[in-house]
Image (cartoon, rainbow, N blue to C red; front, side, top):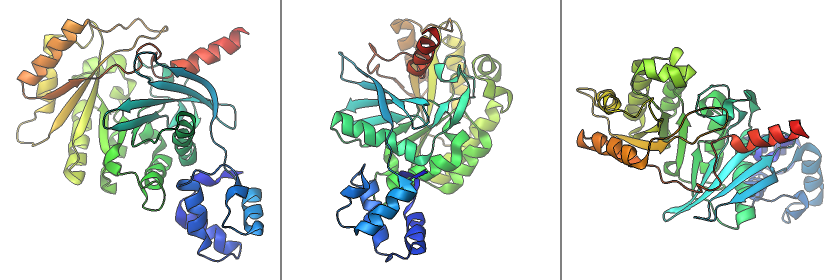
Amino acid sequence: MQNLRDLEENEIEAWVLEQHFPKYRTKQIFQWVQEKDVEDFQAMENLPKDLREKLSKDFTLTLPKLYRRYVSQIDGTEKFLFELSDGHRIESVFMEYRHGNTACISTQVGCKMGCAFCASTLSGLARNLSSGEMLGQIVAMEKITGKKISNVVLMGSGEPLDNYDEVLRFIRLISGKTGRNLSQRNITLSTCGIVPKIRELAEEELGITLALSLHASTDEKRKKIMPIAYRYALSDVMDAVRFYFQKTGRRVSFEYALVLGINDGEEDVLALTKLLKKKGVHFPAHVNLIPVNPIKERDFTAPDRKKIQRFKEGLEKNGIACTIRREMGSDISGACGQLRRDAELEERED
């Protein structure tokens, strides 16, 4: 049975008319689902009983079920392991900043991209999430924390552009004027660099921020940690993100996980500068340096703080805007996907 949270307003309208209910009921239903986050059809008080009963027969309003919750004693960051209706589990993170509350959500159960520093990919891809399951993570976190989410980052488990249609539907749902009306400028989509999909996304001319998981400044080094580099050369990836900027006017950010002895040397600073400052192309770029988060199955470690700072200063001297990602919830985090992985391993041992 389909989750009503998956449906856009025009799709609900089609169902309403098909069931021979007045068209104006569409907006009422959509508001109950997308604005009021209702979990029970009977709570839709302004709808007639027969319409509520028909909705309950054709749809569900299921939210992800809380499986585990971790709260940082350092800064209040919360990490959730949710269980979906089919038993699969996904991770979501709630972070408080001065500019508002941010949700980092998953777009897939697992991931098939194979990045060497990421726990999400260790068990491969189980399935894509629906738009309603993405929205459900936000609704569930708001209900659990009692706090409104104003910024959304598609940077949890999964590759968003590998689930393109549902991710696009999610963006339309959460940013629609009827519903949550979240500004698209408050949405960030992170990708490992699927070139055709970056170009397709650019043609949508959305107002979202694109974040490229770069992590290396040469094809040779990138291939060591990101299998996607065997399919798309960095030159093609960079052409695609420049095209995205040209079509949308939105600055692209670059995620760069610093790994000791792999991509943290002075030569990497120079190569990264050359990559981002292509002559003749006005392209405002921002690099987000991330000390790699160790996972048990890999032997990657982060450089010390002094070396990370030197890397940052080297980029800035070369005119590259750069920040070191603030370590939110460092006492609970683990690598992306590690909570799901740990739960799987525990069950195998039982």
